[in-house]
Image: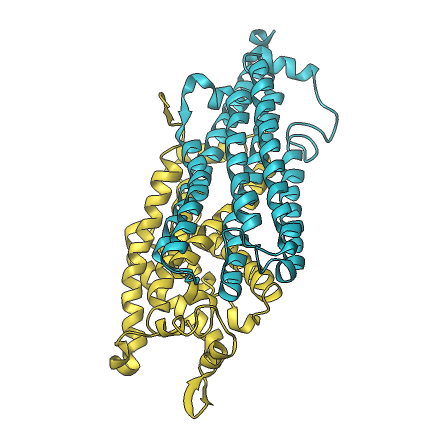
Length: 255
Length: 269
């Protein structure tokens, strides 16, 4: 927003400036071709820090899933949020990354987990961060502060993550009788579709003592997840500031 | 610079094949990116077709026929292709490095450079998201018998090396074709240092990964701590953003030079 008439005139001149080589194609190529590497960075970060919790319905538990996954999934969106805000004042970085991640995650699950190995998609669907990312971008738009976005955005991202994905998860948490024991539908899927590390693999789900919090388990895990998410936000900020922005036009003279 | 802008007018390219036309400067971006996707699709179809019928036992004759042959084919094609491309870039690059270029030509080269970045971006996606997903699904069902499991073969012996091929090749293109941005006199750019480091650390991490799998656990826990160093790939790849920024700064510089030349026709003459 122009504060003076002189600034307004400068902005108008900039908007109407005629270029010989700069046209829409540079923007189009950048926004389209950056998406694969951004999505890949987001996906590999998620897979390696929280992959198992994202792969299966029976791993989407109350203890680790919403504690670890938001931390792992906010890192690259935060980096893009910094880059796009710095370059264009666009509060879109988290959403841009989230949409890219959504595309590559579903491509992976469909082609590599469903078609290639025949795990059903309703067992291996990936969590979404699109609504959580929109919340976080909106907080940056309103606060115009990375510090406030890390605090309120971390909280919004974690709770947004839980609410958005609980809608998909809820049907798999319905109780069923499994060989005389009460289990969830997700548990039945985990038993029915064998995995190479079973049964040890299954023992990692909710293996702590958080069950003693009874129905507050989810809330406790969410608040701790939000704390970790705020930390993850700053990991992403560090990546953007030091690995993406700092190197611009910097050279090492001796190599 | 001014004389160069004037020279541009006499060497205008054919309509539709200019420096910023899709079939001109952007051709590399369009066809190169498509080629990466097509190769990935062919690879996926091959693995899907033969992994479960010939890829379970690495000591079987079927495995040798369908997968050891694939390893060698990939290594030979990737090795020879990389050597030829890098060699061509250096040999021809030394010839063009000192030659004055027109604004049109420099803009075309920036568009080609962005095309190479695009191919690198797609390659990094395939090597770090598409194949790791298949690797995860395979190990969750078929475990692993050697480092040469069917899902490793495209990933470890084609796409990971291709990441190095693309990042180093893109640098060589910039070093010789865009000397005002990446010329040898400027030193080695930190942007490329991070981007190349991303693909190199990915390749080196594979060695640690297989070694660790042979030592600690055979089954696959994807979020296992010894997998965590793989994320450095994704983070270091952030250097790719600096490449876009550095070349767009040069593009704005060319715009200014052309505008200055047009405003002072006497200087251009």
